[in-house]
Image (cartoon, rainbow, N blue to C red; front, side, top):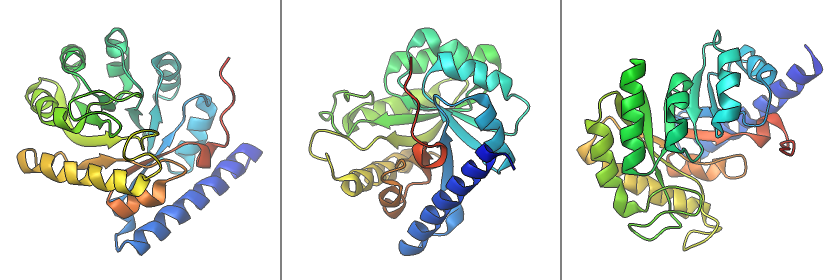
Length: 239
């Protein structure tokens, strides 16, 4: 193996061990948790290596980086997740390669995603991004809608042509009542997921936890964890 492949394989094995241990500790089966590797700022060559190592879910947060990378890796059996704040002028491009948009947080974005998905003849999975640093009906510093805005967006997504309501996503907040309380934040997200599934039973995806706090997310019940640094290393500075 090349040095980079050896490095990524070792990092993946460590992350896999962490997820497995967290599942055992919380009485869950390993297959209940999907690893999404966040490949932002890393080249398509790394994505190709990850695919060779068995990774099937990758995530990006900037369309200008993701679009050419996804095109270069179009022959690989990957599911692409878009996890960044998404402006409507980027929607058409993102819908061209993303299988899931995890950052749906406002009605205007739902409308734009629906229009683009129908035009592309694709079904796009959508997660509502929940901001646990926001007021009940406010918006978060890093995107997302307060818990009080979930129901309205869920109905809009569920009714929108070309879209599929898959569940909820959050980022552990840096401010507010859940700052430095990742476990409590993720448990709150699980409660919100339970509420959502009463009206939308199929929306059972819960995306939470990153390199530093994936164990807390697994313990809370997350179905997907988004890990970048622990797999790919410390990110290079963006120019």
